[in-house]
Amino acid sequence: MILLILVTLLWAFSFSLIGVYLAGQVDSYFSVLTRVLLATLVFLPFLNWRTPPRTALTLMAIGAIQLGLMYLFYYQSFLLLSVPEVLLFTIFTPVYITLIYDLMARRFSTWNLLVAAIAVLGAAIIRWNHLSGDYWTGFLVVQGANLCFATGQVAYKQFMQSRYNSGSALAPRQTFGWFFIGASLVAACAWLILGKPQYPHSGLQWGILLWLGAIASGVGYFLWNKGATQVSPGTLAAMNNALIPTGLLVNLLIWSRDADLPRLALGGAIIVAAVALSEWRGRARK
Image 1 (tube, one colour):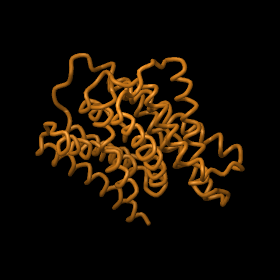
Image 2: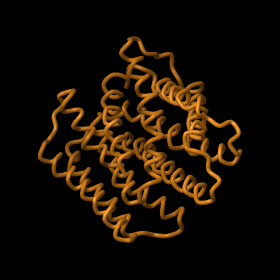
Image 3: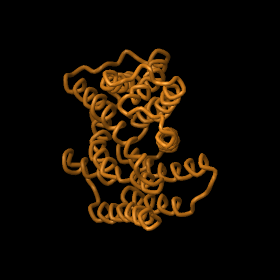
């Protein structure tokens, strides 16, 4: 679980960086394409070009959904919503993870759904306050991002575990480049069709894109997906909402945005409790 915690801390900066410096100033499709291309470049030196075609195509499909499509929805949401609202509307991701995982596994786990519901409750306590009047379109856009992110996490977790169980898997770093190649194909098509000539106009914006692409996306998604294969579905679902209190803390400490500290503490404690419950359950069953 340590990998998920580290990436949560890493990603906590992304919401504010996008909302403050990129949204409405740089074409969202160009931002997405730049991020995934930079992430691809990070992993190209490690890529095994002799990867079995089925493995390569599967990872490309997962990357196209989890990263490519998700980013298209995600960046559009910042044009419709404030940063706190985007954070709020991500609270449903744990529910999607548990439901998709059980659907793919052809079973239903009330425990996993309970852990996800507790995490959603904690996130709702933190961020549920006055919303902008026309937020429903933004809400639906964020749910599109949530579904893509949840589907990709579950698919990667199950695919990689099945490969290791069969004894035919390459090291993750040798195949993860295919994940970013799939995402790049989606982002490139979207930019060619829908993109606008609205590019970064300062060194700061280029620097933020470089950070978001090489580090937050490149290193972050690799470590997050690797961490997802090492925890239970319930823990994975709950950790998806740990980003909300950490993201709000970043807003508070760096950008001096208002935050309700008692609600932040209470909601964060509930999310931590959901993760702890899932971990306790997993150890008790061993």
